[in-house]
Image (cartoon, rainbow, N blue to C red; front, side):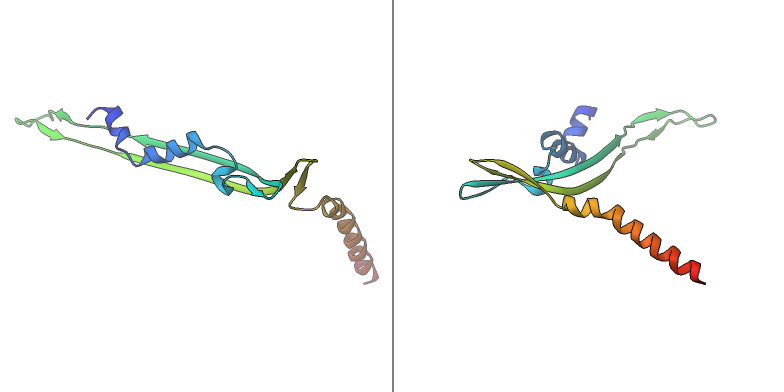
Length: 130
């Protein structure tokens, strides 16, 4: 069997076909959601890596000291991958406007440094009393 036919019959082929055709957020969340006069479009950060290997064989070996050739054959396949999917927000699309709504509110992101600073001051004040 030549290498092209081996790949066509391989279970690894379906993995590569899926990621070569659909490499966007629809792979994770599906198609945009339509509700009356608005469309909700999910936004995600998708990272993936896929690798595969193959093998072959079917060669005759003449080992030293043996009168009859030994038939050896082989076949091998392998695949692996890594996926990381992080939802980050949605686009709310209407006829009047399009707005982006992050999953984590911007106000919360801006408050994190303030909260960390206040906690640091409280902890240092408590430890200096001892």
